[in-house]
Image (cartoon, rainbow, N blue to C red; front, side):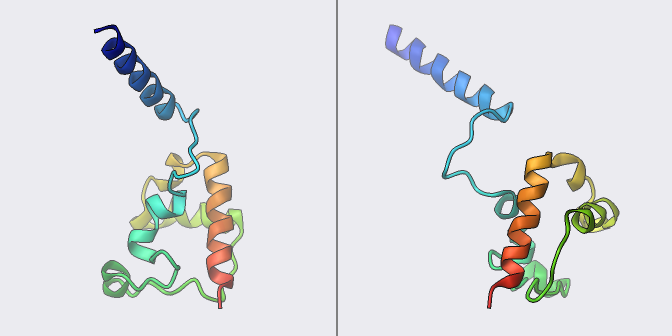
Length: 105
């Protein structure tokens, strides 16, 4: 009984700290994977059902600044509310990921 209570308490604490953003795991998907890849593709080519349907261009050869991405996320109807959901580090990580995908041969 005591072990079960400790397990439940431990799981609850991990869940709470995860909601607060204090637990970061190496296996946690990136912001891009969580929020962008379903439309833009894991490789940034937009070769997904949504990407093809909406004719989303590939990131290949592009270059992105933090300001450009922040503006796009704020003004794009298809990205409504996304800018407000991202923390500073997440936005910076997203820009880094986008530029890495754009530079892939």
